[in-house]
Length: 175
Image 1 (cartoon, one colour):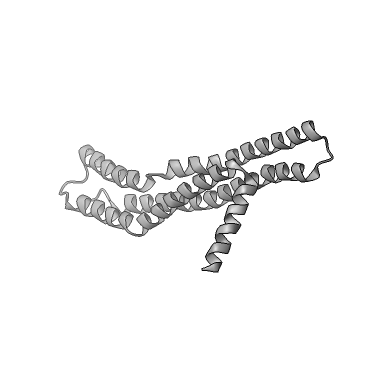
Image 2: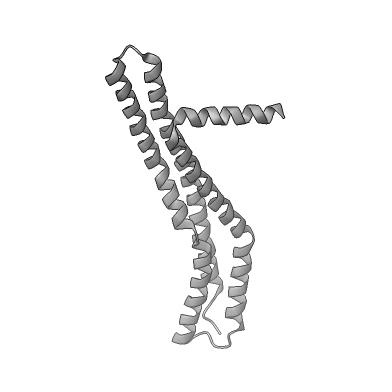
């Protein structure tokens, strides 16, 4: 129990150190990771069943060589692709927002430093240090969130492309 209390205090201290922008970055990262995890789970379960259903739907067709059949094939593939790409653009947007909010934290922290310097001069190093930490911590958090998100967005995007290419190859126009 004491370990949980210590962890909570450490997290609370970190959030206070970074100021209000750090909370916003935390929320963005949390939503981004919820969406990433949802996509990873979907790729393990739902995508495979959707690909199989699409393939079965195509194989059930008697005629597959006409222009009409080609359009039906494109429709089937598009349905699966839309399901696979769901939330990817939102995840990419959240990844892009992380460093921007980090930059906003930098600006607000530096404003705090300048306010201290304007009121008290450069003699109050402790107050200036609080502003500097409020400037650097959100920047770091935004960059860490963006880097972790970019890595997984790349994996998710490649997975979609690979699965769609496999589906297109399996759904032959022969028959």
